[in-house]
Length: 190
Image 1: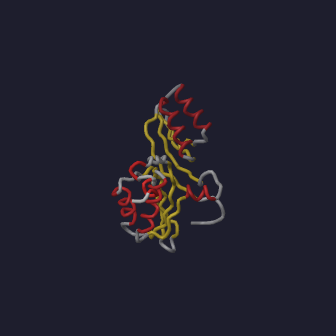
Image 2: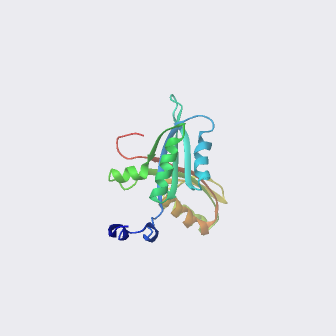
Image 3: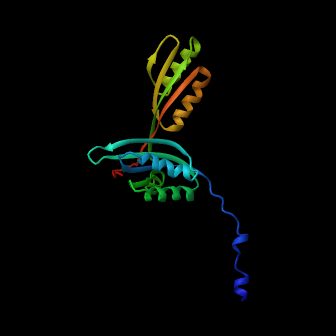
């Protein structure tokens, strides 16, 4: 061995690089056919990746294409792996990481909204407080009796989480969430 190789750092002693997990929103354009969603979900479950939110619907009826919006959390390396593995699935036409795309375009985040229905039971002061909070969060009452309300709220996930958290002590009964719907900012489409 020459002296130059002895001074080279060994891979065994290199400091580990710790990457921080972060949330990413992926938009996946797929054929609208049976089994496609199962294959996408299978990719995640088979590799131990978690899905925080999942929304899917046909968006281009004439072409029979559906859009799957997935919110997942992982290190940049894991997110990149997910992206590449999704691209390799046969019914997938295009995968876009809306979070990375927004950063490239100097936008803070992609446009993301979630629809949530929230049932709250309560009377008296708790009832009045729930109504006041709903007004402050721009939630709409879509069903009401003397004992309960059902609120509808649309917004970013953090706004929805905050509203739900505030309603817990006021008699929160049930929550139903649509999952995140997202688009990239700017004039270009997927």
